[in-house]
Amino acid sequence: MLYYHAKVFTPEGYISGGFRVEDGIFTEILPGATEGDVDLGGAKVLPGLVDIHTHGAAGADFSDGDPEGLRRMAAYLAAHGVTSFVPTSVTLPYETLRRAFQTAETLYSARPEGCSRIAGIHMEGPFFSEKKKGSQNGAYLRAPDFKAFQKLYESCGGLIRIVDVAPELPGAVAFTEQASRFCTVSVAHTDAAYEQAAAAYAAGASHLTHLYNAMPPIRHREPGVIGAASERETVTAELICDGIHVHPSAVRMAFRLFPGRICLISDSLRCCGMPDGEYELGGQTVTLQDHVARLPDGTIAGSATNLYDCMLNAIRFGIPEADAIRAATIVPARAIGEDARIGSIEAGKAADFLVCDKDLQLEHVCTA
Figure 1 (cartoon, rainbow, N blue to C red):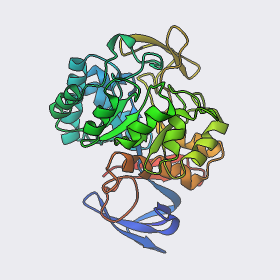
Figure 2 (figure 1 turned 120 degrees about the vertical axis):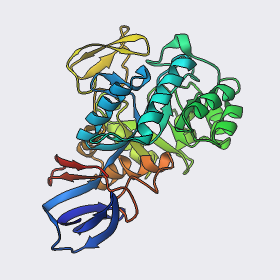
Figure 3 (figure 1 turned 90 degrees about the horizontal axis):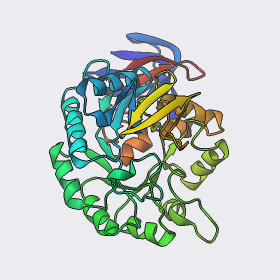
Figure 4 (figure 1 turned 30 degrees about the vertical axis):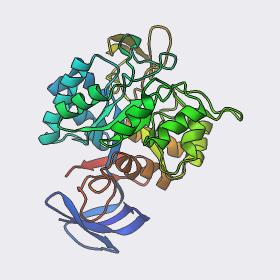
């Protein structure tokens, strides 16, 4: 199938032309193509978005371990331009995590029609600081434990793509050295000083979970986690761009601190796509009101926004369109080691793409 008459977003930026798809794979990118099978009418075509940090949507939460709920979540994401996702757990008992992870393995091997592709698992918790636990359930926090991680990794066929850890915890550096041989290790929910964070990055960590949130602020004499991460060109940083978690000025600052290394994420909860009301997160009640999800003590939990809207927010906040698109596609794909397969419109990659109008309003989602 040859698609033509479009503005196609490639790794080099937009080109006028088209592309060929065969058996769910991009086979050719064709600048200047003026005829073919499908006339896209001058629309913008983007790669399918890649959300590497999403807990839930449409009333479902990955940690429920419910195959039907995960399928519903995947369908919601696909309908909103996210064609690959990394379902993300919360801090819970190991047995609960194991059941959820095995559910992901089932859908990984058999992608339902009309659903977003599972590209792995993000294990957010339980290796976190009590002081910076945020909306994570403190009852289940644990010290870094490589053997426990390895059991979970093996139980889901090696699907864990990211595991989070607070560097200041006892054993965190040794854990990072071991776990980084299996997946991306991310610094998260931490009160670490610069030196502690730097030690984790030296040991193999290469990611930072939801920049600014659940970590110390950057100070001129105490640069902390953010300083340690920003000066290392191998480190990518997640950013929740729902307009609630991070101020627009701090969004612009993030793209300057981590040039070409920002991963836009949704950090969405089961209340994403749902009406105001009460929902559950890791055994805790979350109340959604006016697009903000909070615990009973007022703590902001995750978001109620999908990644596509986060990308549009980034552009609205002043981030160049090309940078925002890359931050929602190829940069997160690279962070989980899946960039050879997804994240950009290139020959040989899965033909997941989005058809949008000139203002990036989503019109159609195509999944390989």
